[in-house]
Image 1 (tube, rainbow, N blue to C red):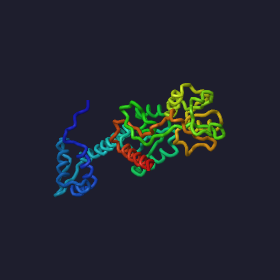
Image 2: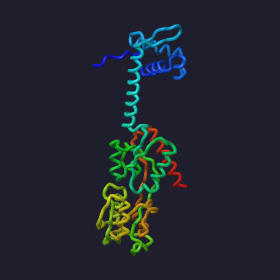
Image 3: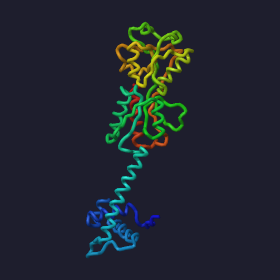
Image 4: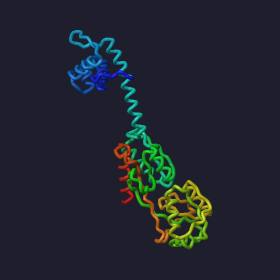
Length: 305
């Protein structure tokens, strides 16, 4: 069991001791710390009380440290450095005000949305490094709860009381087909007429896959899915290659291959996605996340304009 340390010995007083030892006088130590010379003297005297030994001697009007004071200063330097490192490590493990932020994102949001948010975050916190992790909605939600991610940009989770969400935009789902297919010439798509069509899809866990399933549930049949993938860009290329049609969010229009077109769904099958920045409610006061939220709101306003 460790011996109890006298309450007169505090981190602040040890800082004052080091300032005095390094500066060589009460006045200079006081100036460095922004306090009075009297406060410095009182702190040094209280350290003598706490250690129950003499640390200084008077030489004229000057206070001189003895060997015991030098020993205490050496230990104080190590203790303060270790404590500072420990606090920094603790905050980093908790993700609070760390010098990096781990953001998870859907692949489909990396062409416009995520770069805009990262630029906004950099303007507000230029010293914070960003780590970007890609994954499905399901993966990102799990990693967020496990603490592996600080925030996510994904489909807004439903029934998640532990998660705080800031809406970025709502995205409409379209029918995606090769430009040279007969479907590309239609004004809108009635999914009930596509029971014999071949489809490609994202795997389970992606918000676009969920809307795909919802749309065909409304259509009243299970689509003939001939291939699945974890990458929305590969999914678009499968459509362009004639492997099958699919449903895609409108946000990927700017990166859509030239041989793929988007056709609106009939209003009966209309599907939308809410894309949000999400983080745990327990982290709502984290300065890094507050800056990300500010960037999020700014980007959302730009989209409205």
